[in-house]
Amino acid sequence: MEVLGITSFKGRNIYSHKPVMKMTIDITENNIYTKDIEGFNEKLLTAFPMLRKNTCGLGYEGGFLERLENGTYLGHVLEHVILDIQNTLGHNVKYGKTRLLKASQILALVQQQSFRKQKIEKSP
Ligand SMILES: [Zn+2]
Image 1 (cartoon, protein in one colour):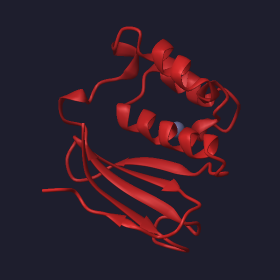
Image 2: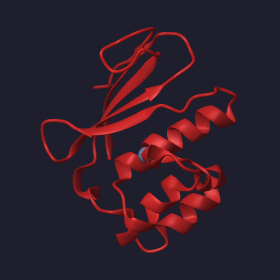
Image 3: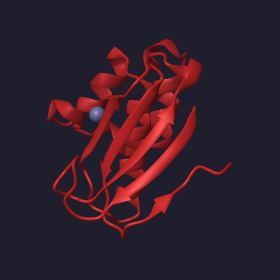
């Protein structure tokens, strides 16, 4: 997995009325479902236990857990891990979307953020 770029948007933007961060990643050969990686879900939930209660897009507690058990993409997992870390640090954020861009190996993560505008460029 390679991070191709991260951009923060302060205020309303084309993705949300809330401040968001857009991260573009290349998931390369890791474009597989979580359920197909032995022990992945258990290790993830041990490291980030709050993910068990996450509603995800299903809208009810345990929604993300259900998505994990059925199998979801690593980009989607990354979205929720970033949100979980932000919440652990005291930011009250919930919004996140993972979308396919041009090719099957590129995803954009758009997530609510509660800190100032900044742009991080990929190092050469
Ligand atoms: Zn989700």
